[in-house]
Amino acid sequence: MSQVSSRLRRLAVVATSATLMLTLAACGKKSDASHQDLVRTTNLSSNFSVSTLDISKSRGFYQTGNLFDTLLTVDKHHKVVAALATKHTVSKDGKTYTFTIRKGATFSNGDPINAQSFVYSWQRSLKPATKSMFPYIFKGIKNAMAINAGKLPASKLGAVAKDAQTLVITLDHPIAYFDKLMTYQAFSPQDKKLVDKYGKAYGTAPDKVVYSGPFKMSKWEPESKNWTFVKNDKYWDKDQVKLTKINLFYEPIPQTSLNLYQAKKLDFTILSSNQYKNFKGDKRLFAGPYSYMNYILYNQNSKDATLKRAFNNVNIRKAISLTLDRKQIVKDLFSGSALQPTGMVTNYLSYNAKNEDFGKLQDAGESVTHNPSIAKTYWKKGLAQLNVKTLKFSLLTSTDDASSKLAELVKASAEKQLSGLTISLQTVPDQIAYQRSTNGQYDAYIGGRGADIADPIEFLKPMLSSNPQNYGGWKNKQYDKLINDSTTDNLSATGRWNKLLQAEKLLADDQAETPLYQNYNYYLKDTKLHGMVHNSVGAQWIYKYMYMTK
Figure (cartoon, rainbow, N blue to C red):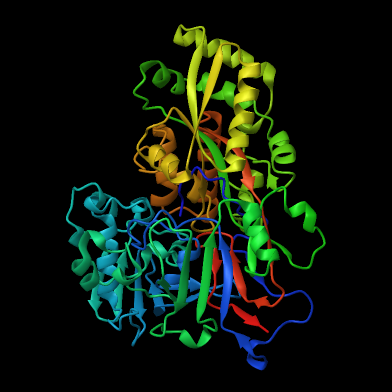
């Protein structure tokens, strides 16, 4: 789920392989749920609020990934395995996938899940009127982008229900990561009967949607601070699900969440960068991997003529970036609980055949360098090209404590080193900041992007000229060609990798967005809580195998 959000989510990036997941068992002897009395309820903290249960309109699938299954999934052993499809075959040219849908699979209301359930869901997400946040993720499936652009009817999508149990997907070109893509919840099935019944209200309440995953939502309202998952008794793999209820609490103030944990009202809590230092060596302390990068985005389509010219000037963008000391951001602002970026793509995300990390191989050039002297040179050149002596703009961010402090650091660093620059801080609640960013109602914006699957394309594709998540409006034809060639050409794995490395370098050299830091998450977990799986990409938490012992 590549996405941009102003909240500096306390996610992690401590992974050692492209598909790494961390199964959180208690320290010491491995627990065996089958030989112990189990507690069927647990209480967990959440690092986000839920805005909708409509998968076609969701901004992401962190905890809510547990409500929806798709064709394939990643199991507790970190492997891509069968889910709602029991098997699949691939044609010799790599362009046709045939999935066999699991017999007897049903939605939580008992309606059958069949091949048409997937076809309908994907067509709905691609229709322009739906205004999905994820149409780009369907790119490569035949006619997907033309449908999303309104040039073809949804019926022309390269996904066809040959019969109730057979789904045939036709691609424009081979997609090296297609199996991984099919584990993402944006590809989950939907029940047309329910969508038609509730219309615009679909997904706005727990009883106005149906579920295909191990849990159902209960006691929830959009953007509420607490909600409950209950076991889905219609789930195809329900015997694997030990918990009957999971109470989730979103508390934006980390200390409040920690207090609840210490009062034994939570079994799990996410720690802020300042908190984790107090728990070093504690057997309850864990680090969970996740690939999330934080950036400054520049509105290159600003309605202010001066700012539009300024943010379209590469020298201005480079100057601002070069004033920032990422080492200081990681050390002073996040107390070491973050990583310095090595470029536009996160580390510990994707590896080539030699087990080399894309993040280590990428050439970020000056994009993550701290050099005030060069910054001043670029700044003077940029102002001269704009024929101005001063520049003023606002920096949009959320009220999250870390976000606010980061914005203050950016302002102080840039203003100190760039003569004539004035930055005003615009701090608003996260949801408002996010909405303004998607609507282009900002000058510059501190946001971020997470990966849906373990591939560099997750951080590169959103910057395509035509991608709706390219909120800054940066455009480069050469970049578009590199990214499109990396997905449309039948390249070798090495050829594709090299195209992506070239694209990253172009993105970095042009400073299309300014990378700030990569997240690193710490959290506390009760030693009686077992089987929670933390995913390095996509849906952050998997609760299917989780259980509590007494």
